[in-house]
Image (spheres, rainbow, N blue to C red):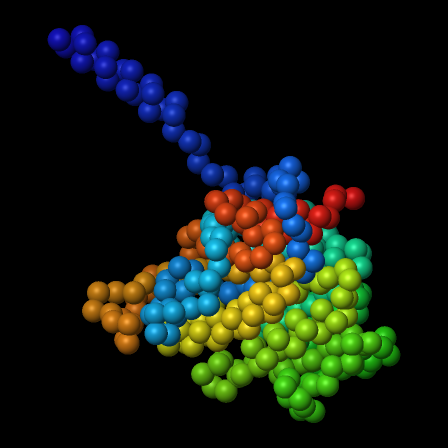
Length: 380
């Protein structure tokens, strides 16, 4: 009997050791996600709108939903997946590495903008769209040189190189950008006025001091640069109200700029993240609802257009946000585990032609490959 028991224990120990997965070495994960070109789509989208709710995890979505009469436009998305947000340097990513994964399909170190771990430039989906003749745009409720929008247009070793990031807007023929951070274009150490240089390139350039977003008269023959603030835009709760109208303007502007070939547009709801860093449930919820209302406006365009793929996701979750016992739909009792990011899986929502690509669980870098597959872009 004892020999049988010992034999059983030995077999169990051998099985448990050989079946256990090795620990993740995040520093070694820097390769692009495998291509998904073998997937055959019935219809390719002409346009892709990638919407990034910075810091938006499941609880941020849930709190926004409960606080908005138990309803969000996100519920209309038929495809839901999950992505793994870790970076090459840390299990907990930052926005720079997270956005670079979406934009270029590489796992890179925290703080990197549009570069691989060896700091070589990684071509972005926006740059590829430009090469293919599509119209392109970036819109954010942060500065336009902040980590998330920067990763789609710039290539620099650090997200803190904001004046260098601003120069990138002169190096890529982006059709439209809207966001804060005017000072990085006009109050520079090198003395350059990049907004004047954009005008010389033929851009229509305007800002918050001249006209509001809703007052812009769209000239589809010119690229558009609009700065919403000298530094960071205000929170929604303190009067910022441009995201939804700017998203509508950007969508129709790009559609008219390239009616035949289509467009790529990235829209960031940046300050959901800032609410998480502040451990403020009210800040998170007001930003989440503002972002969802913008999703609703873009969804209306996609429903009417029939050729637009919308992807909604986040780079990471911020705050370790929880809805604690004692909460009601009218009043959330929040809890937080940190004032930084966490490593939880992040939801991905998709609507429109090509949306079926986004179901399942995959690396954050796969979002880039899936967008390329949806567009029908081939590796060059």
